[in-house]
Image (cartoon, rainbow, N blue to C red; front, side, top):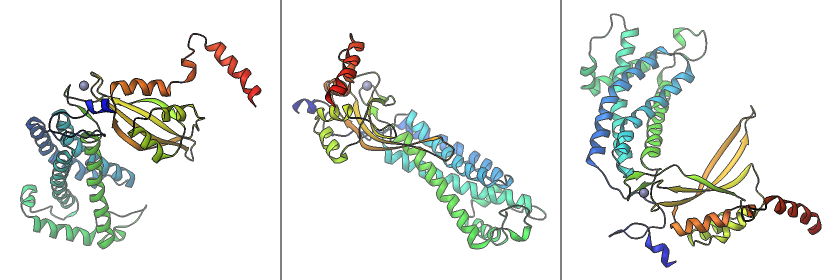
Length: 328
Ligand SMILES: [Zn+2]
């Protein structure tokens, strides 16, 4: 175990068993994220407002909501990632802040679009004027809530517009969905991917070392944390259910041997009603730090037995076939 203390964070930071961002922030990353977010917010707001107003298909409206949330998150968290900000709370906070800005701009743009489209004689207020008058914006939204701007279903008349509380609920769901999408996209960009401090770069995508047979989760987690690799050997040798198994993943820097992160995923494969495979993955152990020597031991533990007898694979498999009935 003494060897496992030679990696991890150096300096004044305590040794951490699991990977965690150092929290380092770069000025370039912050400036780039905020600048791109400010540039993207009005653009996204107007595109969303027009598309939302003129597209009558509910599914496309839902796609727009996701696109709007993902768009603002990409505009903020993307440049922050490029600028090597490895501080997830900051990335998430700035993304949420600029999502709020974009959402506010979007309301103003949408009210303008709606009045241009439906109000007789157009509108007597400008976009910027509206932005500076939140109270007026609220009152105009209340008017639109009373009259409604769309109806659900086919062939309905203007009288069947969705209004009042049902419309407010739809607006609330729309708002929550925008913020939730932005949060998830920012998290995947700024939090979920480890960073190699030695090479100053984001780690490569993890690769699968081996599928493992399902066993006791708590026991496997304990064994991995204690670096007891024979537990992996047992799980790799056991018969594997192709529909439900564990997947042992290794994430590395890709350039140096400083960063070796072990992840154990629970993988469930089900078929939907169209016969298409649906893969559900849940991390049981995420980014456990291991040394370079550990990686070699882990690879050996999960290697299929035939690899040991690589020079005479036919003989080995023949022997297996002969042995099997004799044992039974
Ligand atoms: Zn590296």
